[in-house]
Image (cartoon, rainbow, N blue to C red; front, top):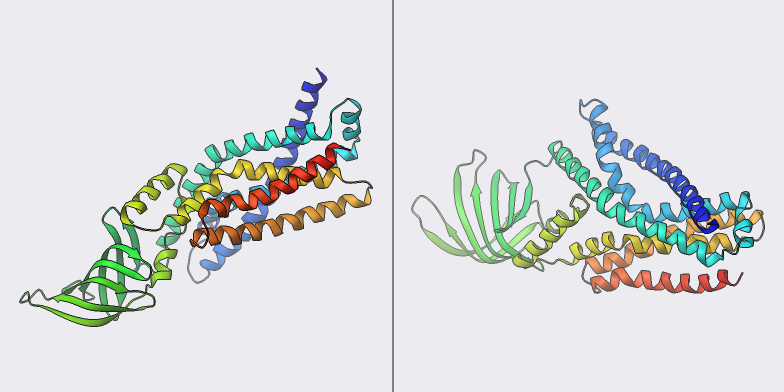
Length: 360
């Protein structure tokens, strides 16, 4: 009977602390974001309503990325609260071991992680998608456009008073493969068609070898080498498809399949999908890390010290995790390894820490 009561008490206290910490973090994200949006519109006549609305749409997505560290800090404050009220000693005297307490907190984190993926992530990704659509409508680069469809890569580009409509089968390294470029003047009058098996797009001066050019007037064709100036290069084209946080889990799966059909790299999609789906595991690890830190408190003066250590640890973990995930996204190491390796290292640390606190 007491076990059920203690579990209910812990659940209530943890959720209360978690929502408080979440509110603080979301408020910070909102304030920082709204300043960025105001700065974006500083040279326009837009009222405060537009940046305010965009901030509401974008903040949940940023908040999602901070959740592991929110759980770490929330767990630390949870332990501070039960230590202040000597409830931890009460649990011990009732036969409840440290390992049982940490195990129950980990279970709460795991369940919350699943609910966050199923409900909050898909909700925040829809808001992010709306945010990007609205933000792009105010962008100064409306004349540029790049999308991927089942027919390959499509780019609308404008340079030197020429409008280029580009369709390519796929990107391989720094090259566009089997590409057709249709050129128009500013009034959209047809100028010429350019076809090439390969186009070097490593920089903004596209190098085309053995290009076949067709003119509409007399349908004459010629084969030449030429250079076309563009607003795009391989780095910019790849970066256009990096905002995966605006897609739900199901949309990511569909995008993964489409990219595979067209021969594009799916490393970044896999990395993002793994990162989202592994959130419950990440939350468990952060909860255990915070628990280990706080259960090693011996004196009142060490509480703030351990809290600061936890915050610093969360920042270190974030940057190391980001760097390893970046290696996976770029294909330098296997995607699965880039996701699982940090968890393995942290998991080993947690295992050793759990053995120690269970002996206390």
